Length: 231
Image (cartoon, rainbow, N blue to C red; front, side, top):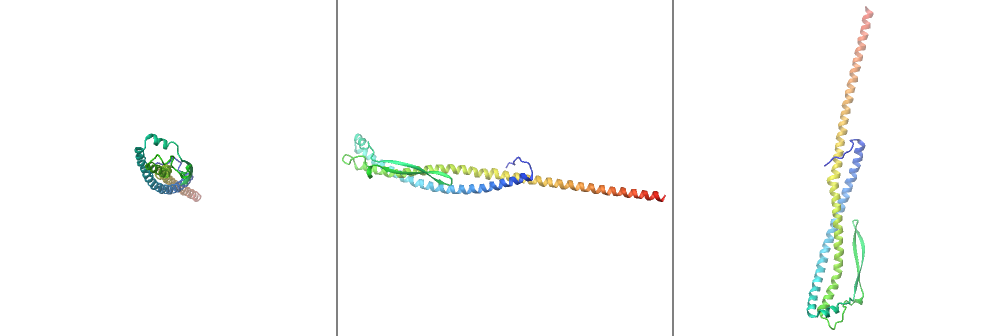
């Protein structure tokens, strides 16, 4: 803990107490935000795991069927069959707010083909190629959702790190510094008050002694006049 370099005055202590109150309240709010961010992050991570497994399963099936199709069909026939795509995918990106963090939302739509995903006729191709096309099409949605989830998790992780640094700075640096400085100012003010009290007591004693001395001198003067009159 380090004490702030301030003048030990009551006005400064009042100002520091206000800042300490604000820092303590900010620490609580940031701690609550950090807890909620962690909760949202864990939910996204669980969803991310599910989407990854779903996408990997669809891609695994697609690649297995595609490998078989390549073994059955010639390279020229396969290239000709897949030369012109039947469908395209358009993606619109918007944002949603999670604890002041804007995370992406992917809205995608398949265009063209009128529901037919095969860019070829059925006469010269194999069923494995059909299965591969279906698996690739099925993998599109979980892949895009996975990308959305991955980016959301990344943004939340960055915000969690920033919030954690702020919480730690308040908890371990700013608040202890304010408390140490307020304690120091309180001790200095109490010390000054004791010193002022001691000075006042000394002044009071000096005034009392001077009054006693003046009274004694007055009494002596009166006695001398009385002696002179009697003589």
